[in-house]
Amino acid sequence: MGVEIKVEGLTKRFGSQVIWNDVTLTLPAGEISVMLGPSGTGKSVFLKTLVGLLKPDAGSIMIQGRDLTHLREHDLYEIRKLFGVLFQDGALFGSMNLYDNVAFPLREHTRKSESDIRSVVMEKMDLVGLSGAESKLPGEISGGMRKRAGLARALVLDPEILLIDEPDSGLDPVRTSYINQLFIDLNAQIDATFLIVTHDINSTRTVPDNIGLLYHKHLAMFGPREMLLSSEEPVVRQFLNAQTIGPIGMSEEKDADELAAEAKSGQELPPLPPIPLQLGTSDGTTRRGERPPGEWCRKNGVTPPPGSFQSHNAGVPGVRADDAPAAPTAPVAGTSAEETAADSVGEPV
Ligand SMILES: Nc1ncnc2c1ncn2[C@@H]1O[C@H](COP(=O)(O)OP(=O)(O)OP(=O)(O)O)[C@@H](O)[C@H]1O
Ligand SMILES: [Mg+2]
Image: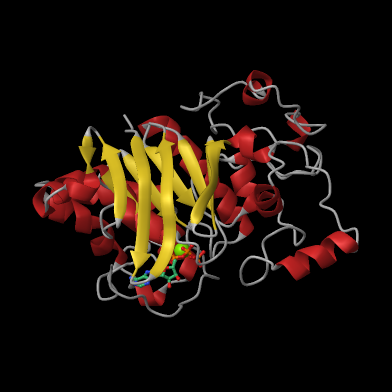
């Protein structure tokens, strides 16, 4: 029913390069959390560390009373069955067709018969809109299709924890909406704990229960969605509102001269946009982590930006309901002729 992941004091280095230092956060059981951060801040490394593929240099990762960082290989193998992971590059086996790729965890970790495997594989392929593409090789399909095949593979073991690295990179906006809706519906159905890494600010504003931001080798902030969307903290504010004004520069932190020039020119961040309503499930059932809109702000004495939590700004910030596209209600759209073959993928990590 979804498990809590408690991370404390986690530090990761490669040689002398510190990736992040002293990361402490709790992913609440059954809730959806999003992790943001400029490129290269170690989001993918964080996911790989959570699943035990990379060893941290310090700190703990507690899951069901056990510290993942100190497990022996055999116990780690067992606890990995709790996880479904979609890697950033899809990590499909290039020489196996999609059916075999998706079936792989079932053949590896269960004793299911081939006919049982078939029904699970076909169900998950259908869920992500890949029915009919079972016999294709990863090198014969588009990047977006590979993402969805990776997602189907991440789902076959009915995971308690889903780690999803940039599900929307390479997806068109409509499929991104479908994928977001799929995550929300799945979360309500299977109650898994989700951690999604994304660069999509619109998804970040509407999909998760919690948001985190990795920046400059540390966790700048992690907490409920409303906390980050109403935050005046310069890094959080700049990142969540996709602004060039603020401490984050093109390649790294801005230096003192750049910040001074910015201040001198009188450039200021625009006011915070309204906090949109959270996206609901497509059948109207309650989300696992659902709270009344504005509850966090009320409890914490924070005045949300004007216009927050109104039905007209659900989903797309700044777009009125009359202009907004209808929320998708069906699973991800099926494969289509315009999805062309793309370069091949490497072997899994
Ligand atoms: N196996 C590895 N060995 C050495 N360095 C690594 C390894 N994996 C990642 N790194 C380094 O760790 C840093 C963080 O990489 P990571 O892929 O986690 O970034 P990211 O935040 O996911 O970026 P993006 O948004 O571009 O995907 C980078 O500097 C990368 O070069
Ligand atoms: Mg990454």
